[in-house]
Image 1 (cartoon, rainbow, N blue to C red):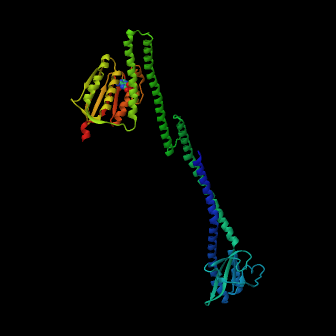
Image 2: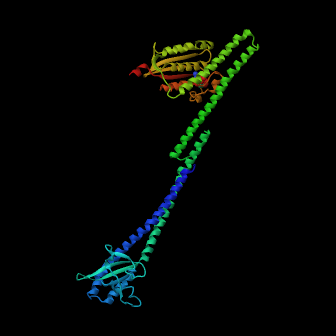
Image 3: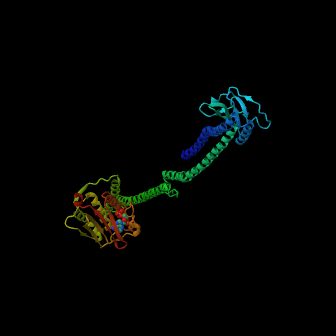
Length: 475
Ligand code: ADP
């Protein structure tokens, strides 16, 4: 199963080779032989008709002597490696260059069943020429016409062996060409193996590793073609999955830790109250601490739930028109108690009395709440937090600025990631979940709006997000 593609290609290559070989060996010999016979016959016929018009007519009109004609035709037959005959219409061989040779035996021979019209429309015939040859020959016959009468025929014969051996030489060339093509196409197979098959195997192996859960496995394909791009995309994807997995692990560790510590203290205080270690008059104080811890648990659970809800595909937004100034005021009021404890003042710089925006009111309230909560958490005692609303270029901007601990530059890009808590903030904010800003980001993304951070460690941070004013939507 794993090597199917490669096997298919090898099989395709072998089939291609066999098929080519079969085609060449089945069809090419016949085609070549027929072609050679026709070509040869054509040449012989031209020669025969030339002889008929010159020596043939000369002989019959007694202009040329028999000896001269014999001599000339002998020389010609040697030159053409053929047998030339002059035959009378009734089949009597008057001259035969094969017989007039060395022994001078020019004995007259009769061809029985001589029929020059037997070749029909084609001007040549193959075979033993009416039984006058012991082997197969290619023969052409051309009439000698004098005074409008056929006086005899000139026939030229060459051995079919000669044609066959010529045919064989040509076929050998075809086979050699075929082998060269076959070997050249082997180069394609080698290229295919290097360019497609090996990278594909590496990619498949990578995919298997990912399926096993090993997202840190790297697919090592260096090429700059589609294969390289696919491998790079896979590496990128697995990197992202690995990061998400790491985040998840970090999150579970954080959540477990954050759940365990309040639960341990709740359990400890309640047990101490029950067994009397904490006297009854101190119960109120410790119940207050227990309540505080349960609030922390509730916050954590709520954060998880809202992130989960926001995450479910196609976040539903209940878009309405509302006054953002009013919302900011109300959120600031809810933090009065906390601010008093840390002597933090919230300064509101709101544009106009009323600033209408078009958004999901409940979700925007959560954003303002989370940002203000963070600003207070990470502010020093006796400092000022400034919440500002403004309208610029058909956008409403809300800014929450504190004079707190600030965010290190290397953390700025990470704080919107889920579960991310910067190390510097850990000591200051034990209750943090690392979910607040990711909830903010998700809500704004669903609104197609943005959030920016300007922060200097030790000096403070400013979070600015945009909203859509009411009039833009109505246009
Ligand atoms: P958390 O529940 O920890 O506040 P957030 O997602 O709201 O989670 O914030 C993530 C991290 O971003 C915080 O742990 C903190 O390190 C940093 N951060 C957020 N807001 C501020 C801020 N106003 N000042 C300094 N650091 C901040």
